[in-house]
Image (cartoon, rainbow, N blue to C red; front, side, top):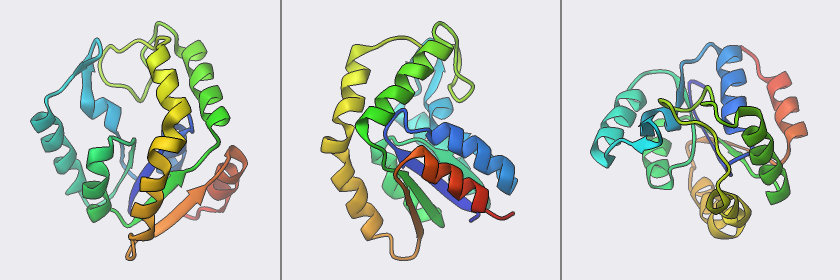
Length: 168
């Protein structure tokens, strides 16, 4: 595992897993949110974001966490391992709510620029609908990832067990 992407619903713990796995495997860590947002929730242009992402993908070793659905096929071309956090919607909603409480008014460590955490009902709706709107497509992509190591973790207990079993 030298090039790992971590995907899954918001609140499933992609960034938390990425940080722990990067430390354990001594891999550089790239948070897609840091590439996308540069301050006050302002987004980089699609072209600028694509250039930044491609520069990271061309490096020999990394972990990249985040979805940005349009970029998953490109990231899958470069990665050797895909980790899909396929959690229940209630677990993801709980993850988002606890994150909002923890970081309310502050910028999370995995976020770019000055983007203070806030309560956003549209975002909560996205989290609730994630499984019905995105899961099938994710699973289809993973089924077609023949030359990739695919790891599907369905809850935080499985994530913890996976981290305990990962060797350097």
